[in-house]
Image (tube, rainbow, N blue to C red):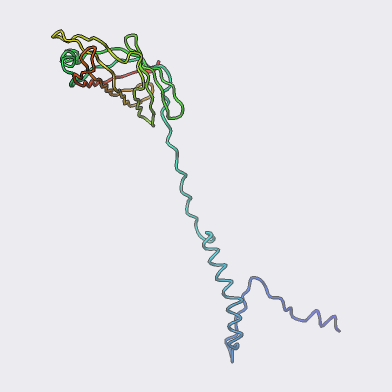
Length: 216
């Protein structure tokens, strides 16, 4: 009989899926029992439900934002050849006046570019002499600044009036737009002018050019 009684004894175990509902009929649970039911049953379920919602359960998950892409730089290493056209000359005293007649003239030149990441070094060769530049490249823009020139000065240049002047390179800059194997842009050079053989200043000269080069 004991075995039979054990078989018919209702189980005291409660399903993990079912919440015990307090009996509100009759006298109902005592205040202590109701507080215990809220603390041990209702609050954990609310916490679990909130966690389920915050993890995206039961609803559509918003798409994760795409990772930002790192802009790539244009690849400009190599040898480029092309031409430059003198657009303007300002200042420079009698030397500047002499160069006015050359505005619109075109010269040929070559550029050898070495690239490491976005950093550039370049050698510009024109009329048998060369200058070195350093700079950078972006997604479609090249910027180069003069560092040294093989011939940094022209001594004893003669003006139309016969006066002699020394011309010293001060700076140079080049900015270009890259489109595949072609670069177009502008360049500016600055010079100090001195009375030949002296340190007496005779003006400052600025020349500007437009250029285009193609990679070989």
